[in-house]
Figure 1 (spheres, rainbow, N blue to C red):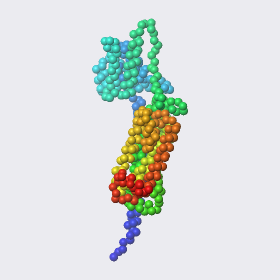
Figure 2 (cartoon, helix red, strand yellow):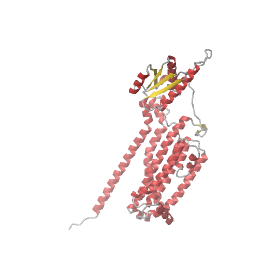
Figure 3 (cartoon, rainbow, N blue to C red):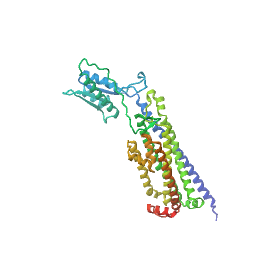
Figure 4 (cartoon, rainbow, N blue to C red):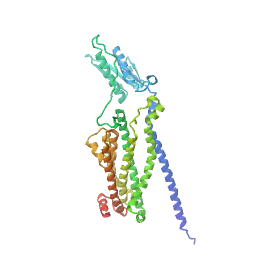
Length: 439
């Protein structure tokens, strides 16, 4: 009777595992490259949209029964809607709107419906002399064009009113006023208040940063919890716990799995950050002198550093908690039971940051920026769109670091007991009891 060599099956199993590991590694690298390409493509989307849209010229018709009123409306609309950006030579700049008169409203509406026109400004004078201005568009009103049309209507009304002055009261040429906004709570750079355009840019970037932080914490935090739960479900943890201390295993797990996730994240985020930081320069090179002014002009090295610091601290805090959760469940499938509260906490931080980015400056914005685990989200949002004193930033960082130290000490106790608990249904009470027994 032939004898079976037990080494051959073991060698086949090892070879199969090595083959699967190589496949997994290749898929990891491929997914990183695909995500990197997608992320960079999204960052370049504003430039691409401007590139394909720069040759577009919107046609706007002015309908008015009074010849003088129609001529004045066209001249005023050109002065407001076709104003060259600052620093751009008007000879090298193509106006984005062609504004011309239409004699029939019905015919203009037909052209608007089939796409020959993009908008109609109808100006009519009532019996009392008041002007009625209607802005027609095909579909939902465009925010920028409708606002420009509103400014045009106001300017036309002012000029029409001043034209009724006595003949000897001559006025100079009407000039479009410069308009700006200022906020007492706005951010300050080098002792000067940041202008409204950069504040809007920072609001856009702050939203992007907060969303990235929220998604990354959820995804890679679950990586840590799943890795711990998988080792425990395979009973490998019983061997590992005898070879190393719980503190060593916990720190190694957080650094190992968390570091692998962050490596993928950095491979995706660094090119995107570079594209965002250089987006104005790329726009000038692709679109010419008038291509700058994209929604990333407020990005600075200090804001990038703040994002990196608060992201790292926030991820460390949540990764420690996720590791404790992973050590407490008996199967990876049970993670959903205990990971939901963590997801809700992260969601609360995300919502607090959105309140700040939307303009909240009261206690609802200040208090969460000092309360972990909400502070990584809320303080980053405050730095993006408001004026934050240096002591506030240092206090927020200090509280967050102290919280990480306390959570790490508690997590080690939970981890030491949780990795050896099998067959128990995960619950909050059992979770707390296990932590007390570990002490």
